[in-house]
Image 1: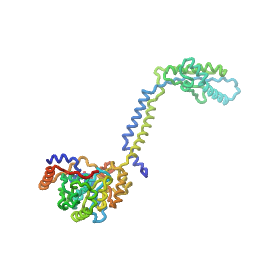
Image 2: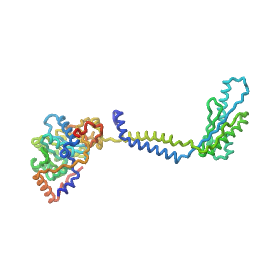
Image 3: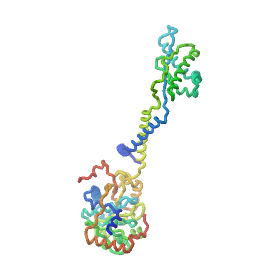
Image 4: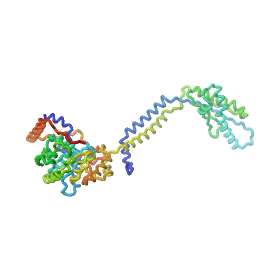
Length: 231
Length: 262
């Protein structure tokens, strides 16, 4: 049964942060962690939203790995899958998506019951749960505000993975409620125009934009400063 | 698109598209080579030299004037050779199919500066024909000039001959290929610039700053074949997970998708 599940999980995210602590990519995630730490305006920033302009730009991969490197730094991190249209977090960690955020938003269950352990010290997961018919309405309800407050009380950092900005409205709602937003860009794939639109969308939703993470960046010899120091 | 033109960026972009430029260049070289070797008909050239000998009639004439007169004479002969009067006779004599203007195009008359020698060059697809036309034109000219100018001062210095191994003057494949290489290189470069300009995706960190004004927190390079997340080794958690999946299987539903998706 496990092997079955494993073969099915070919869409698994690349969790390098955990499997290859010395890898170059992992070092890049740590660099982003450092940059985020330096960019945070004070200690009240606890919720970081990861979003992108269009789908499949690496939001989930980035948020997973960022959660791992933040947990590595000794923080108590909660990784939330708020993409209630196409949840993926349970695939990454090989968990069942039975209970999660949607249950909490429908006030069915308590946070501590819905949170799952990731197996990584300091990192807990809140999966999406069963896909609701009205994700945008659920996210805009005041229940989410209470939930975020509860999360903030329990964890040092809450990383939220969200649906694409230009496709659905969910991310704009979430960006407004989160302390900071990180835009993920698929280098060489994302159109300049859509990045501009995504930025504008975040600005209109009064989000605090931390910055951009460039995913799938092709390293050339000009990027000498990113070369692996260990090898 | 870009507000500033960066030479370094431009060169980097060109270097990236170097294969494209090379391929287009080679393509054009090959194309011009094929065309000039197979499709273009070879053109042969025959030349005759005609000596214009001005008889000195008046010894009192100054030397300068004499030379001037000679040059004028040579230029006049130049035009006479290519006149319909001569050419139509050549056509008649050789029973050529070409018109006077056609023949006119294939004949070039040139004279050396300050010399009394005319060079008559004839280009034709056949060496023998070129020689024949050159020699006939020269002899017709020689005969005609007696009545036209009332002088007999034209001698054929060197009649055209058919060489043992005639070499075509046109086309020059090497020259054509060189032209092809230049055109191909320019076209390839243009194409590379076009491709580069058509790509409107984000590719550099500078793009982000330029377009959105946001800071780049970092880059993540592609992960080549990294292993997937290793499952927890904690036996209790594993049991929990198995139980979870089991329950799901019994119910026969996993992830009931009710809502809309994007």
